[in-house]
Image 1 (tube, rainbow, N blue to C red):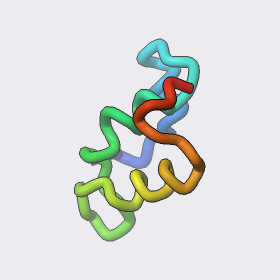
Image 2: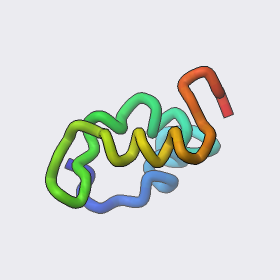
Image 3: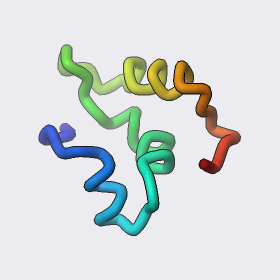
Image 4: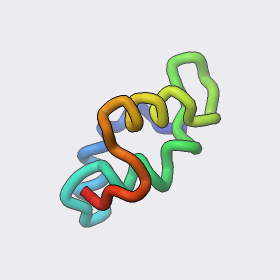
Length: 57
């Protein structure tokens, strides 16, 4: 459950400069708007932005 927190805020609290690592590692645990935790929506957005697991940002 994401509790509606901003991913950038979470990343900064955890000491990261951006959300790339948060998205790569935790996207499978974040519920989408339909309540699914499979990560398909955020992974799709991540890939559409031209980012992939090989890109360290």
